Image 1 (cartoon, rainbow, N blue to C red):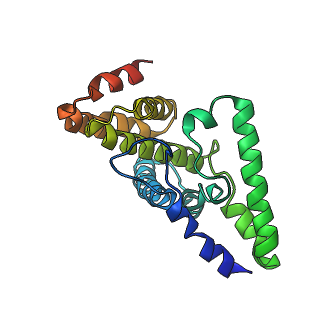
Image 2: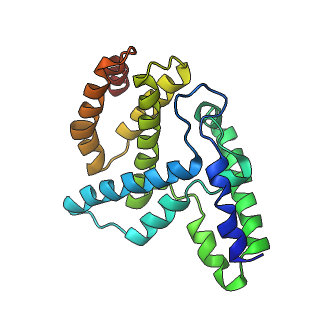
Length: 209
């Protein structure tokens, strides 16, 4: 019981594989995903600050490092399923939040419960930090899908993942989004030019939609 239980539970995130049930050249765990999201978010936040935006770095690190902790209880549910309808998404989020709250109540000392509730909450919101998390999370979907498409993986789900993540990023109002679209994405597309799958076409269609 106690904090030890929380620390021990983190190992479970290493065992949860993202995008289950599909052929992948490279597996990605939820814990690896979370680490990459933190790295993306750091750079995105630096870009925001360079444009005069104030960033709450403590909040940013808390929500990016813990944003998928609830998947310990429900696993990684495929994005197309998770977002099939607003009702289903709300139900899944309610279940996840309920199980996180139950875990906190059962295992975390009383004087630390309020801290864990803050850290393990859903971090995507309209704040600068919440929007950065949204973009960083979708960037990792792009890079995971890109790695599969670049190797010639013809699973349709990776095309959908790449396209939908790019569309979502494009809709977020941040300086770092413009930077990503203008300075990072072209390099990614150029690197994928030798892929048997037309990544440039998929990218252009997503940006035009």
